[in-house]
Structures are given as structure tokens and as C-alpha cells.
Length: 187
Figure 1: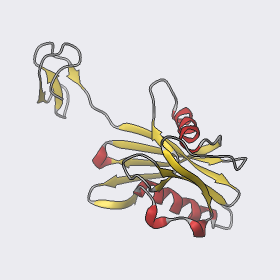
Figure 2: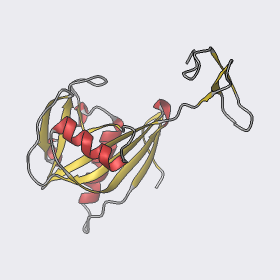
Figure 3: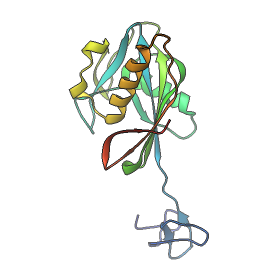
Figure 4: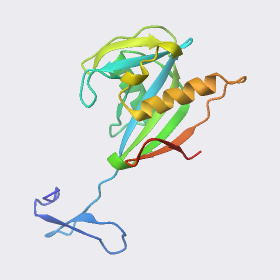
């Protein structure tokens, strides 16, 4: 950040009084500009014994498979964002069960929320952001063609949880840092 969005004057990095982190502070009006993590919301849509995945038509990771997810917009809940993104990317209407994975992606300042969801009808498609949408059984998942570690983690948790004698799908809280591309399970 070079200029204040409030008055247009140059900004500098400093630690404001009562804070403990460097922030962009306006040289003229004193406005403190906070930069906070972005929230990504999406779904893990289940239809019978299959999962709905989307092949990305946008960067990053063009041509790789992912769960339908994207940035939350102002004025919507995380649930609404997950439903909207699933409709936008996979042309699918789902019914949310509950929050399934919460991942802090520390090195890119993101928080990803994936909801476990039911896809009542096998109706889905592609969009401007999706080359193809498809239902996959566990043995068909293109593991080496998944776009993101967070998606791989959510799918691994799902198939592991589903395989138990009495399937339960507890909230998984994960932290990813640049030093480890794999997960650190917090709880």
C-alpha cells in the first residue's frame, strides 16, 4: 500500500500506539489501514457415495480439480457464500449439513471454511470459472490433479470419517504454514 484510501496521501509502516504489529498509517490524516485475512467458503457436496468436484477454468491452478469454493462477499454469511460459490462454480444446489473443515492458511492470509453438503439431485454443470464438473467415487478422485492442499485434506478427512463403523463428521480445525504444505490438525 502506497497511498491512503481515505485522503490519498502517502502512507508509512509503523506500529500504532496500543498495537503490536506494523500497519500502514497515513502521513497526513493518521488513518490506520488494517489488512486482515480473506475468507474463502465452499462445500464438499455429497451425492450417494460420490463427491462433486470442479475443474478450474481460472488461475491459480487452471485445469486442476477442486471443491466449489471462493471468496466471501460483504453482506453475506459464510453459509450463504458457500451456497453461492457452489451454484456459481458447479451450477449445483446443495443442502448444507454443517461446517466440516476450518483451515488457517497462514502464509497467504486466508481462512477457508468448507461445509459438508448434500447434493440431493445429480444436477450440476460448468460455468465461466469451471471447465467441467463431475461426480467422483473415492477410488476415482484425481489425487495428483487436485488444485490445493486444503481440498486434498478435506477429502482425506471425509473418506476417513465415512469409513468408520458409525460415520461421524466432526469439525476439523487445521493450520497450514509455508514450512509445511501438509496439515497440522489443531483439533
